[in-house]
Length: 358
Image (cartoon, rainbow, N blue to C red; front, side):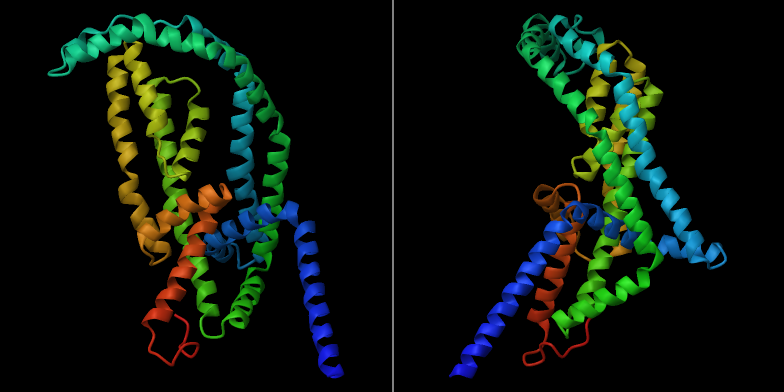
């Protein structure tokens, strides 16, 4: 009896000590968790590209890591710096434009609006009503909040240093993972095997495929849509095209799409009597807003053979649950869970834990 009590006390103290050690380690690593997750996602998604760069640089890993690190700096740090610089440089104009909403008045409805079949007269009447009352009243109601918006804007710009350091830390961690990626991959496979001898290694491999599929399907599609949308805005002469392009990229990442930025730009052009440019941007908006239906499924299939609905649910759910990094974490969790459950349901009875991981 005494031996059993001593063994129980030893096990209890061991579990408590290990739990306290894990919690303390997580607390110490808390500032590095988000950059580490981002770095891991970036490295997994771009690992094939890094190997190609290494092959072209005389199979020198150090040179390949240097090139990929510089590329990440150009992709993350330089656009952020340009966007913040543009916002700061035009801060006075943005605030003045916001305060000018109080005196905003719509011009009379254009002739082409009345000429539209079926809806022309109703649209012109709505335009006239809005010009007489709606916009002015809305602007006057919004005027007290302009000062608060300006203060919020300046505070967000002031946190640029924190975001900048987070990006630099992410790039530095990515460089470390690039340098010894094979060893990290072997460690993760062994960890998965220890957790689930029958399926663990396959689950780790599937997680990498899900990350690569999301990176290809979601991020690349968002980049293509935002760049095309930004080109359309710049060609049509829309002000702050660079800032709006960055906003479109974030909306595309969130699976909302670029139309929320492009559609008001089309309305603004028509309102400014730039009918030709408005028509051009309208056609361009339809093209840019629908091209993701072709690009995204094709790219996701190149990275992971998973149901598209599962990927989309993971991206959107992960975004709401974990923030921006959730666009990668969500699909990975759902993909691994879906595959393990599907394997457990479909495998013959009595063979659980003995099949080779797929």
